[in-house]
Length: 541
Image (cartoon, rainbow, N blue to C red; front, side, top):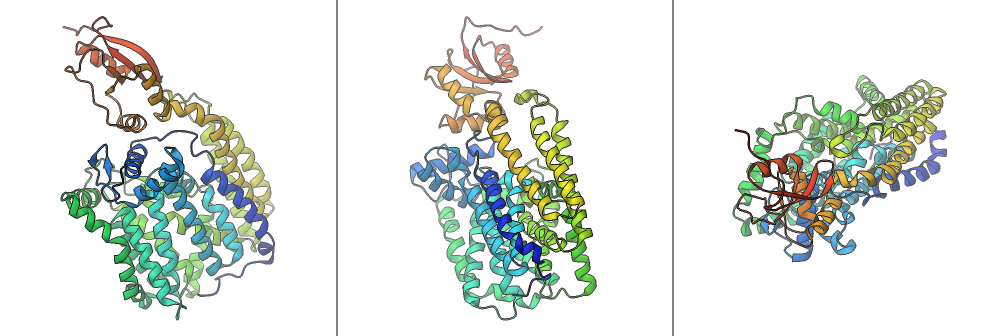
């Protein structure tokens, strides 16, 4: 492996132990603390979790099933890992979110090793602090979705590909090839063909940038291909044999159509992922300028042959460019670019430690990012539909404001190590504050965990129906009530218990149903029972 592009400064080496201690605390809070503070949210978390729980209970480890029906939108890896979580931790949010937490931890450890190998120990220590405290990582690492696990498999592919591409004569080449094949196979099991596309194109672009294109063929050796086929293909073959519709549903509808057409209604502007990446890297976005400056200096010196930075840049650039062309855009699509970007940010900060002007600029820039976050939380409006009152997050704004001032003090004096440590600790402290104060209060409004319990109690054990609910609430209630919930119609027998919204209740009354309100579940959600003697609305003539 090439030597570190910039030798670490003595001061950086002396603070490595302290950084590791701070990084351990930040990692615990950002990745592991408060995973059960609130229930599963959105439409994806409860669906994926329900499938994994069914897999753990039913024993069918080939066909994902949602309420008994084959659900073929995503590959199997998330469900396998979460199903193991249900065996280990029981029926809990920890089991559902285990794949993402495990993926984030695996990515952090693997890239920390790579960072120390190619850039030196101080950069590796800085990376360990930056990674868990980056907004994109701590958000997706705590979500029961496939994004973080997919990013982890690509990170492993990047780690195993780096020595094969950058080194002239890599030691134990066959072992690296086997590792790369396994990682690529896992990527395909995590997300599908996108694993091959992102890894392959990222490697090609990185090899071109680092002038190592001739080494790329090492990745296509028999050891790589054999291990990839052994890991990645058997499930696809088995699933297609058991489910004839699998090819159409998964490959065509949820891969080709999702990329080429707006069929899933996730259209965004071409530049959408620019702001997503900037926010996702917060509060470390100020180091982006230093990273670009370092790249420009490398290009000017024309010494980028075998450069780890240029190779990693390919892994950052391609996912952003590729998904910018997609007709469907969601923030998680470019998550695979974030880990490599954080490595480059950590390297830029390590280089700046021995350059007073750069150290002051990054320190003050980091303070500015914290200040912008503080202002955003201070002026954040209330969300009446979610029970969030104006000013509810202002305590978090206070934490970030104090951190911004402290980071500005250290940054203005060129003490970048301290400024970075303050920023990382402030993110962890802010998340801890959210987990212990605000999120438990919001659980009843954001997730359906409390609503499911209350609707079951109010129904007295009777079957629960739904009407007019957003699909996030529909899937959430079905997860916590452990089964599909039928929607109320005019043919539904009188006396049925229904979870609905106020608008839905009025629509039921206009359909001629008498309504008795049993109780409120959230700001705009309630449990009602149809009753001939209940309150009715007469349609206007």
